[in-house]
Length: 283
Image (cartoon, rainbow, N blue to C red):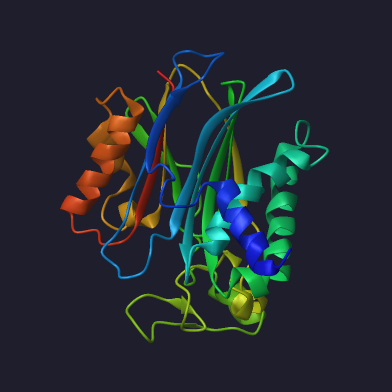
C-alpha cells in the first residue's frame, strides 16, 4: 500500500470527510445526568476546515471513559486528522494509564508527536494544537493540552481554566534556548521564528527544534459543584473571556444547544476563525 493510500485509509478511519458529522450529542450510560454535545463551524478563511473533534463515551474493560478532544490544525488538516485517529488509542495503550494517568498522557503525547514527524512525508509540513479531556467513570477528569485550544470548567457559576495557553511570549526563553526566536513580525502577535503563534504543537517538522509537544496535564475530581466543561478552539477565546463563555451558556441545559449558542456568540463578536466546541454537562 502506498503512502497516499495509507493516508486515505487513515482519513476514512477518522471520519474526516464530507460526510463526517459537524455536530452531535450523547449521554453517559453509568451516569445518566452526564451529557455531551459538540459543533464545528467553518471560519471565513479560504482554506478548508482544519479542526476536528472527538466527543464520545467508550467502555474499556469495567470502566466507562468519556473521550473529548479539540484538534486545531494549521497548514492543512492532516495532522489534526491523524490525532483524531490515534492520540486516544496511544494514551490507552500506555501500561500505567490507570495508575499513573498524568505521566501516561505525557508519554503518549510525545510518542504520538514522534510518529507524526516520522510520517511527515505523508502528513505534510503542518501541525495541530490539541486539548484533550478524559472522564473516568464520571468522577475523575484528566485534561491535557498543547497550544491555545482551551478547557474551562464551571463550578457554581465561576469559570476556571484547566489548560494552559502556550503563547510564544510566555515561553520565549525556552524557545531561544533551543536556538529559535520569537518575533511579532510579520503580523501583530508573537510567533515562533516569525511563523507559528503557539509555542507547543504536534507536527510542524520545520520548527520542531524550537517547539515543544510536552503537554500540561491537570486532574480534577467531579463533585456536586461541577456544572459543565467547555473545550473549544481559539476561535472562541479570541473574542470571549472564560467567564463570558460560562455566563452565556450556563442556563442552557442541552449540551449540544449550548455548544451551538457559544459558537454563535463568538461569530456575533466577529470571530473569523474555524471554531470547534464541546460541552460536557455534569448536572
